[in-house]
Length: 103
Image 1 (cartoon, one colour):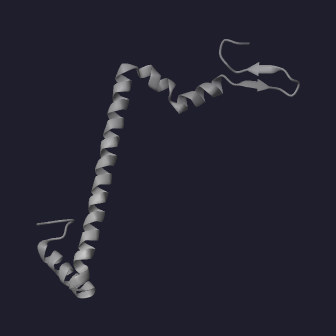
Image 2 (cartoon, rainbow, N blue to C red; image 1 turned 30 degrees about the horizontal axis):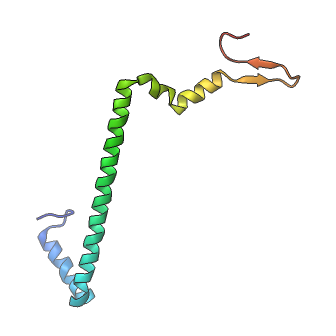
Image 3 (tube, rainbow, N blue to C red; image 1 turned 135 degrees about the horizontal axis):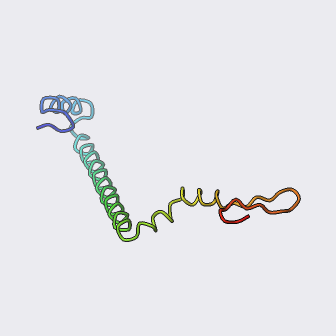
C-alpha cells in the first residue's frame, strides 16, 4: 500500500504521533475533516479536467468546421490588421493612410 509515496510503516508512525498529539477523542473528527477536504479537492480537480477537455474538443471542432473563423477571432491577428490599416493625422489636418492600395 503506497499513498502519496508513503508506505504502511510511515503511515503507522504518523497515526501514532497524531494519536499522541490530538488524543483519541479529536482524532476521528480531524480524520473526517481531512477526508472531506481531500474529497472536495478531488471533485474540483475532476470538474476542471472535464471542463478543460470539453473546451478543447469544442475548439478542435470549430477549427475543423471553419478554420478562417479562428484566425479572424485571434486578437494578435486583429492587432496586426489594425496596425497595417491605421490612419495617421498630421498636425496640418491632412490624413495619411498606411493601408495597401490607397495613396
